[in-house]
Length: 233
Image 1 (tube, rainbow, N blue to C red):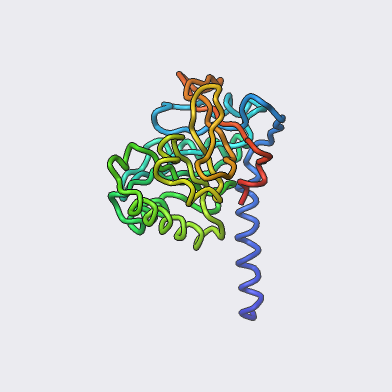
Image 2: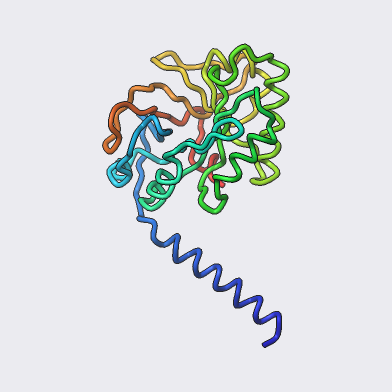
């Protein structure tokens, strides 16, 4: 059999298997909501019933913790991403960043765990005071940019940047204001980025309730004209 024909058959078989697997995902219908549009989860949310979570039509996206630092892997990551995808949710993975480890070490940890073919959304990098206490502004920014460049090399776009409101304004603004910004500020007062610019997602509470998750969960809302298309790979 000619080599070209064999190669085409191999590619066709791969495409078939990929779509066969992907067709195992359940279909969902979502609705526009001014309450919340997504959630983010980690091992702290315990064992999640993703079928019940997926029954909530307000949830358009889910970010799932994959890794932290140079070696830590969230013990619930594999189950969470498999079950969330199976139930039709649009998922992305995030890395908890620390300035005390090199960007290369951290991205290697993330890349080992996160399979690009399982991602519906841009990766997210979580940068907050925990893991960066007493970090120097210049060093933190340099290392974060390098990590983001490694993501872009693989995914073609920079990751979403998640941070706490005060921490972001003190250490990251305005240098990162042109990125897709996912900001945590709890309560009714809307965030404002130092130096101008608009945030894209507002994590407005850490005490949300969603069926299928015991206890509280972070609730996240699109802001400033952002839609799911802005996150989709």
